[in-house]
Image (tube, rainbow, N blue to C red; front, side, top):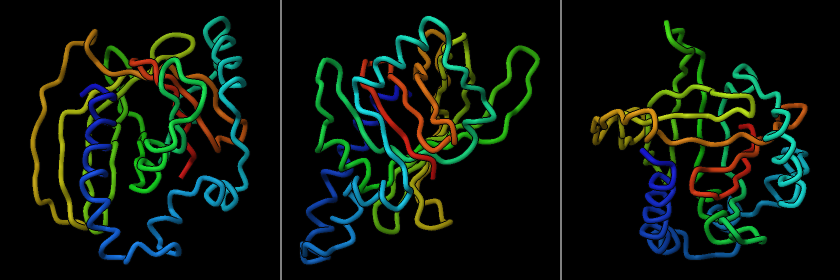
Length: 208
């Protein structure tokens, strides 16, 4: 599944359930829903300073020319979406970024699976709203010097806790049709990761 489609599904789901959550919580300023979308509070809790878009673009140029030095081992773990910049726009998209933070949109890279042709590893992308979680599961691999993170999802599940409410298998696309992120930079202590999606959007994740 294309990452752009995944993010669009995230956005559609979040827009659909936000009014319900506000009604349930009384739309109070102190509600956990509102607090969870505040990037400043999130960064304060993790003691992380994120680079601005101009700095990321500088890092991107270096990654394209000389490589980012990012290896698979440093990617293992949960990564939460924090900021999104749409292609051609200098300012962070406040609405989309907030929605992704509110619903804990993340991507997880798990322990490597060895194959004869190339090393693949499990990839799980998910969002949460209330007691429900939507998970997209599949595999990914790194390619090239920058490198590119190519991946695909072959399963989508709707869960309530550990219970699977809905499950559907997805066909694996041809390699040229697989989704990818062009990895840009990884903070020296592996606290944040930046990348550009195939649609041109730039993203930053925080290590969960």
